[in-house]
Length: 414
Image 1 (cartoon, one colour):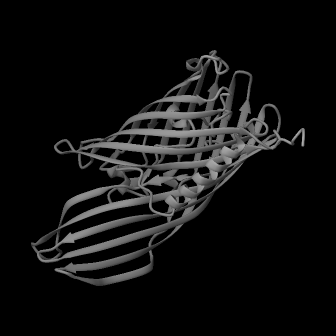
Image 2 (image 1 turned 90 degrees about the vertical axis):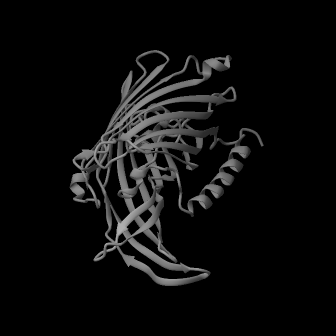
């Protein structure tokens, strides 16, 4: 089993790293136009099926990156590996016109382990934000003239995070943790301007990078756990490349090329998170999370809106009849969740909020109940058809293969 797991990990990491060397495309949301894009609807392990909740929940066979202190709860000598895939279909309406958009890709890869029962650590690579918008037939007036031109604009890319988590057990009731994240990514915008006898293509690529650290705490009681997380603000340094070409008949002319151009740095806000989980009801695990992101402190704005403090609430429930049963259906994990996100962008005196419901299943692979194939479906709605905004209904499917094995043990016999 260990040899097979090692081979799968190496193959997945090579393929995933190669995929992330290019711009990821995990959304078709028009609201990804603003800021650095939308926060992803995918995650590691089972949490997307639980309304993105789990700040206080222990790690057993599914990696949980919501709180670095939780890595101390990984069972002794356990090695965990998770790789995810996500697909999204958006239905967009402005009250008159409707449109469907879709996107799919690998979404995350993560490893975690606890070699001696005292501490656990993990490494994760996943998207932090996603960009995937398209604006077709945009009409713009030429300054100082009554004429106008038509352009098609599309954006893709996003911000990725390479994250290290470390959790240590201080006592039976207290775990603490730290995490360090390197955020990096490229956001591209391609514009094609259609003129009477030629086309003008403008490619803009904005690059971002920065470092974030966080602290985690878990208090364990008899029937419930409490979790607390602090994530620091991040100053993302930025620069841009611009490439402009003109196509006329069969000729291609380079009009302009700028490398390492100057653009404003971007600030991601400080974040505080609180969570509670309980198994007071037999066979039923409940989790409730609250997060607040302090965007007001960044004093930032977008072209048509400004950033305001963001509140996120997640609720999740998981039911397992008997994880040690010989009957397969009794070992299946049933999950459901709800997530409310107040949004951080205010346009025309309206905040772009988000409501979503999720259902999930965890199918155990093998009789030891350590490895799972996790499925989750999320339906959500954001925005409104009032004013200049659009309403977005999104359907997301997440698939995560969560492998678990026993490592770090000495041979008893040679």
